[in-house]
Image 1 (cartoon, rainbow, N blue to C red):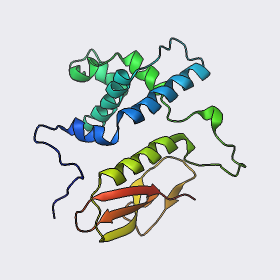
Image 2 (cartoon, rainbow, N blue to C red):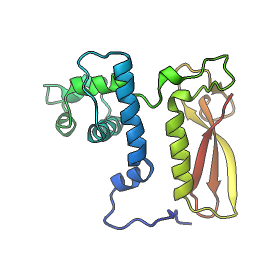
Image 3 (cartoon, rainbow, N blue to C red):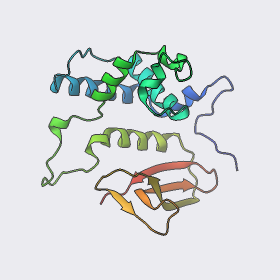
Image 4 (cartoon, one colour):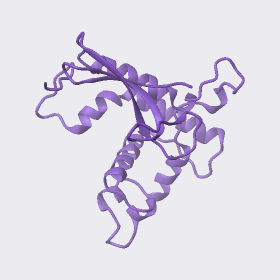
Length: 196
């Protein structure tokens, strides 16, 4: 069965158009706003406010770094032609990339509930992204009455309180998530991170 989105894509549409279906302008406004707030709260030296265009370029660089992996971030801007990735180096300077990475935030730390608070959320820092993506996934999927729900693991080797160990899974350590999939259209409707 072919995967079908709710709004069909045109042959002229690009992967960027598909990405922007989920990471829309509203989500970028949240990221830009919270990043600027964090930078001002922490009085980051040599900070100039980021913008929508600069943040889209920053995320594009992050995706490019996943596709073309190098041992260190600085190597993308290296003067050694064996490492330098010119299309990425042309987007922004390494200093600016590192400064945005240092300030990158999705939620205001000053408003975070304390650990003993009734409203404490282990995923507070990424909650706006999770909520927005869940809404976008549900809006864009084609759902039928034939649904399947199952748990899955997202590989994570770092330290975090929601990390789990499941010895019978192919990926034994990471984040446990619940996935709802449509068995007829093979579309993923939503991913919900299991709260502990």
